[in-house]
Length: 426
Image (cartoon, rainbow, N blue to C red; front, top):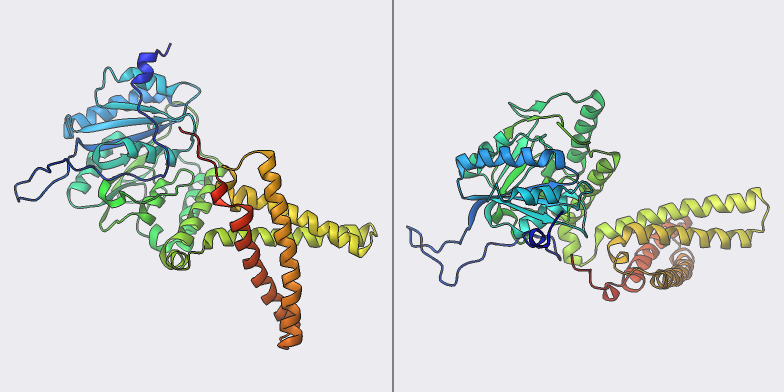
């Protein structure tokens, strides 16, 4: 039975923006041997272990990590288990281990889910100058940690455990999984070459990083691949890789699913649109390019729905053209609204719950789309009749203008951030 006293030993769960804070300075910063003020670092290294249903592995992992780190950083490290409220009560067993392992701390998250956010929430309560992450399933060998820390000591800002350098490999992966892993890396090189090409194993979930390289950066992780965020948004000037052999699970079930690969693709696209030249352009124009491209993609799906229903109602069932067109348009608008609500503006919609608010957004979306239709007709006539532009080119230009118009008005009216309710405290 988990007692109230044990509950009080758990770490508080941070909320708000996902960013690792800078280490605080003391009121009177001490001077080092060179006469320069230095930061207070309660511990040298904080290693985060994100878990979900890892009760069969957690004790052995904590034991192995403690043995390794006691040798290289005695009394100068902490292990932070961040558990997503596991059904097998991993967090409970981990908290009981704290009596035997004084460097162990435990957090139980009941509101948020996901490996990447768990890592960042762990970093937010961490006290280390160097931050790290390791899986909780014993597939990442703990004996590699000292080599990663050694790379940081030699000047690296980020040290990654890699399966694709000397000394690295996988134990017994199937051919399908090997192809998927390499295919994901090639896809990353196409979409995000600067970030993905900087390491041999961008999908690694085993690395350590200087806090100063990511402190203060607002992170937007998706899925399991937190390393992509660190590479894409951190200030990484020097990088090192250490080979390791990926081990098979000793207990529990693998959490790798097709959803992880979809999240990986989505994450690559998000980083592509928010960093580099596109990110710079988006910030200068104060225009959310990534959100707009999602809105445009939804618009294309609506066009397919519109044309398909028009053919079905008018061509196959013989309904009048006008009535068919009206029905097809309205159903296409409904299709677009649902996709935009669940994808394009998902972050806002999650904080505007309730049937009444959803209905308000749908009505506003309909009105904006109707205004867009009127604007398109006016622009088409202006471009074709007034400026004598080719009809098809004029229609294309009108669609582009109206798409931007619809997006901007829906951003400001249908999914207004000002109506967002405060997030529930974790």
